[in-house]
Length: 113
Length: 117
Image 1: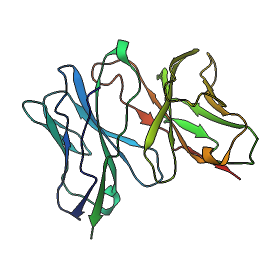
Image 2 (image 1 turned 120 degrees about the vertical axis):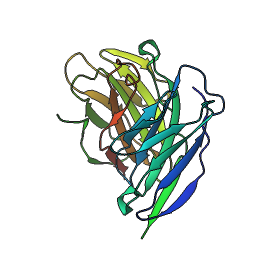
Image 3 (image 1 turned 90 degrees about the vertical axis):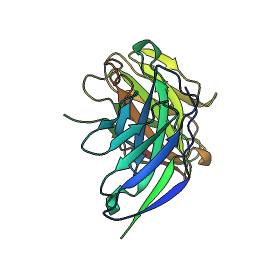
Image 4 (image 1 turned 120 degrees about the horizontal axis):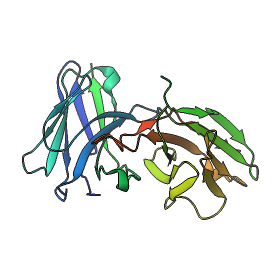
């Protein structure tokens, strides 16, 4: 699975959009980008994933660059409850290749009032 | 539709005792993963199992730790002769293993917090 690079920390004002970047320059054609978050002491929570098209769900939007070497998770209206560690993971999504997802250090997002 | 259920949520053991952590995956999920998170550290993969099979145990310590996922019942993570360094949060996750783009989406439990005195 390709390596990812994320900034260690970011701040965001409450009510504003939070844009969390992830670099995955070695991504291969069949690897998906997944985002999870972990609110303090809780179990990690899946947010969104994508292959090459931009994706949106009730939690967030995922923007993947055309060359797929980087992506941005967007929380459109951040709240204090969005303060968490956000993890970007790249891995192949094949039934025959199911296996571990490796969590790096992630980005600690702090939403401030 | 219950999510991933882990128990106990909190477990206290004295050095040398055994700890057993249980995980029931989401309904319809046949893949189970265990992760460990030491205080102030990140999530570390331990083991990946399917029913009655250990698929990848590359993150498991060589001694004292074992995992199983029997045909019936929850997955069990067993730690024998616990030491203080085993104090951590242990998270279980499950995935469906099928479905284009969703085969490996992980759903995590709330975790089991082990404290070794």
